[in-house]
Length: 176
Image 1 (cartoon, rainbow, N blue to C red):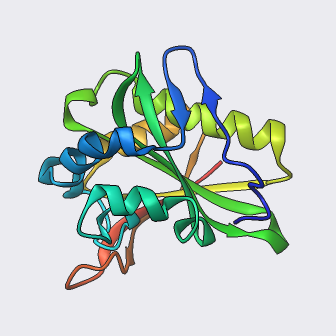
Image 2 (image 1 turned 180 degrees about the vertical axis):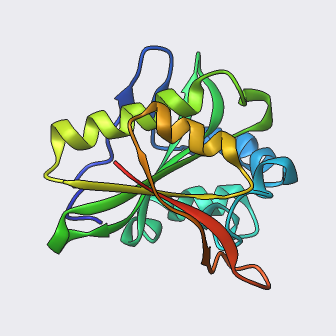
C-alpha cells in the first residue's frame, strides 16, 4: 500500500474533504467507534477498533495501518462525518477496494456517495488502478445504493464471507 500512496492525499469534493486524521480528531473518532448503530454493518476487525484509545489508533494509522489500508477522515464544514478507506491493494492486477462508514448523524445526507466518488476520481486521475471493488453486507441495501450511484455493478449477491463474526456473513460484491 505504501508504494501506491507515497504521501497521504488530501482530497476535496463539492461539500466534503477527505484527509488524514490528527490527534485533534480523537474525541470524534472515539465517539464514532463506540456507536453500535454504525458498526452493526461492519467487520469486527477494523483498524479503528484495534487499540484501546482513539489517540493510539491515530498514532498508528499512517505507519502500521498503512501496510494494509489507507484510512482518511471524512469532514464537512470541519465536522467529522466518518471514515473512507482504500484497502486490499493487489499491485500485480492493479486492483483495490474502497469503502466508507459514516457517523449515524451523517447518514442519508449524500456524504457516502460523494466520498466514494472522490475516491474513485482520485484513483482514476492519480494511479494506475484498473479494478475497484467493494463489499457490503447483503442486509444493508443502502450501502449498495451508494455504490450503484457511483457506477458500481453487483458481481455477487449474498456470498458468504468471513467478517470476523461467529459465522460467515452474506456479502454483496461490487465491481467498478
